[in-house]
Amino acid sequence: MTGSREMFEEREGERRLNNDPASMPPDGGIVFIGRIASPWITRETCPKNMHAARETGQPAVLTIDAPYREGLQGLERASHVIILSWLHYAPRDLIVQKPRHAAEAKGVFSLRSPARPNPIGLHVARLVGLDQDTGRIDLDAIDVLDGTPVIDLKPYFASTDAFAEAMIEGRDEPDRIRR
Image 1 (cartoon, rainbow, N blue to C red):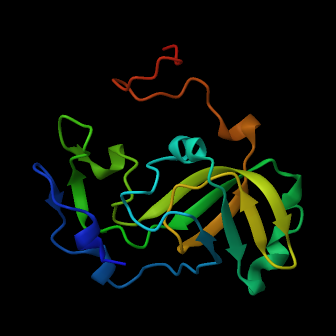
Image 2 (image 1 turned 180 degrees about the vertical axis):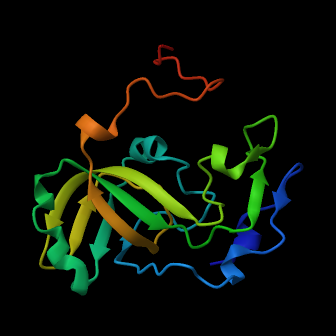
């Protein structure tokens, strides 16, 4: 696999930080609790979001490492899970980005791009199966590269996690009604 500089070509209007956060001393300790096995091995073939991932019909498997498997107790009651992943191939110093589909460059915090100071991915997936003994969690789909580390897993609660009125101004979302 190539490094982040090779995977993320530079585009007009983009700016990088003076200091790459990857080379700075950590101010918090994050442990990887498992890894995701997905069919995606290149950035070009990986779906850009969970909607696109579901359209492929390709499932994924998340395996929780042995020391953390007891934490799966009770998760089988959830229909969906929130997965926080560490997007380890993404550059961490790109602060202004020019998405392929956008007319203008935008700040990293207004985008869902994996390239960010702390490359944390957020995914909501349907829980298809769970085996606590092996740490295997079968998912309906995922939008990350094979081998992506997992930093946390949470049950998804539609009653508190979904906001029907949420929107991004100027984004074409025909099913949304502005309130």
